[in-house]
Length: 408
Image (tube, rainbow, N blue to C red; front, side):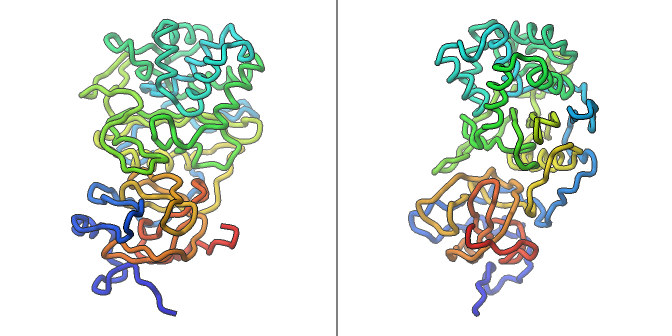
C-alpha cells in the first residue's frame, strides 16, 4: 500500500518541526473554502514527546510561580501544599465569592429568574458582564470584605487602591480557596451548595469570552469534577468554538501596563491562569492551583504548563484519562467532528497547546505544504479530530497511539 508522506519528498523523515518557522511565510491550506487551521508564523512548538501523567508531587514548570493546595475531604488532610498562603490576583475565581455573597441570605429557589440566569452564566461560562452587575450593585470591594469575615479567610483582600472597579484584582490564596469550597460543601445551606456545585460540574468548555476554560483540573482528571477557573493577562483573543480566526485583544480581566504590585504584594501584571474545584466521587478532593507566567507567555503555553503541574499532583479520588499527551503547533487549529474537512467544526485549539490523544485513524488527505498526511488524531476531551499534521511528532502515524475503533 502506498504510504502518504507528511513531509515533502525532499525533506528528511525526521526533520524537526521547528523548520516550519522558515517555511511559515508560504504555508497555506489547499482546500478551497475549508475552515482549516492556518497562520503558523506565530505558533510555538512544545516537544513532540508524550508527557507522563504519573503523579509525582508538584512539578512546577520553569518560569512558573505557583501556589497549590489539595485537600482530601475523606481524611481531612492536605495531600499537597506549595506556598498555599501565597496571594495571587484571583481573576474569575473571585466569582465564587461574588455568588456566595449574593446567596448568603437568599435561597436560589426564591431569587428572580434574571439572577438565576446571571449566576448560571457567571459560574458555568465565567461571564464577566454578570460579575460586573453584582460588583457594581452590591458594593464592589465590600463583597470581598463581607466574605472574608463570614468565611474566616486569612489571605483574601479586595482590589488595591486605584483598582477598586476590577473584581479580578481581588487577592486570593490556594488555602483560602480550599476553605471557600469547604464552606460550599460542608456549611452552606443545601440549596446553595447544590445550586453552586451543579453549575461548576456543568462548566462549559468555551467561556463567554471565547477562551477554552477546560484546562487544569478539567483536563487532568476524568469526571466527576467541578471547576471554577481564572485567567488574566495580555493573551491573544480566545477563539474557542469560533468558525473564524482570532485577533489580538481579549482578556478576562484588564491588566496594567506594568507588573504592578497590588494589596499584599499581589502581582497585577504577569499572565495568570488558575484552576480550582473538586475532583472525585462525593467531591472527595478540593484542588486549588494558582499560577503566574513569564511576560509574553501565550495562552496555549500557560494552559500546557498549568496542565502539567496539575497532572503531577496527588489528588485522592482523581483518575487520569486514558491517552497520550502531545504538543501541537499552529494557530487556530480546527477540531472536527469527523476526520474530514467540511462543515463539521467543533472548536479551535489555543495555539501550541498540549492535547490528550486517545486514538488515531485514517481520514481525508490533508495538505499543508510541505506536509501531506491522511492520519487524524482523536481528542477524547474535545470529542473530535485534528489532522496529525498539527501534532508535534515527526511521523505521520503516532507510534504509541492505538487505532480508533469503528465507534470513534
